[in-house]
Image (cartoon, rainbow, N blue to C red; front, side, top):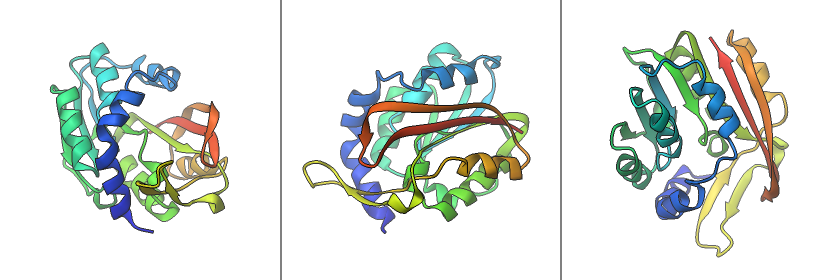
Length: 208
């Protein structure tokens, strides 16, 4: 499976994605849980930032947040910078995420994990935890289904293809506990129609 096709797909649909999902508040309960304890000056790292939907939601409520977002698709990065000019966005393949001199109060992986396989996600998870301050929070979500269903998927018109990875119930929770984090929020969001295989999105918030 190729990550290049996934990158090309996201570049292609960036504008459509913002129009389609920008107003969507299906995850607002979890987002608001993250917002509750914030003072408004925290350092935030988001991977798979897309067109800046989550950053816009948070900075509308806490304009003083120091927000850095990474995305694999340059078109998404450019759109996010337009959508949220007060934040910083950079192109990055999160598999190459390295150590940094700064630690973050909040790290977010809201939309990246379905496009990484299990070994890649485990590596990214460990790196994000290492970048998190003691007492900071991690937000992570993935599509929940049997891992065996993972594979290449095409858009309805057959023009765009991406590799999509699914994760079974308990996959994330087990790994968070092994990394020493305490789960503070765990929600399963069920949509009316499946995304190809599953209509269940697992959202977990954990504290270091």
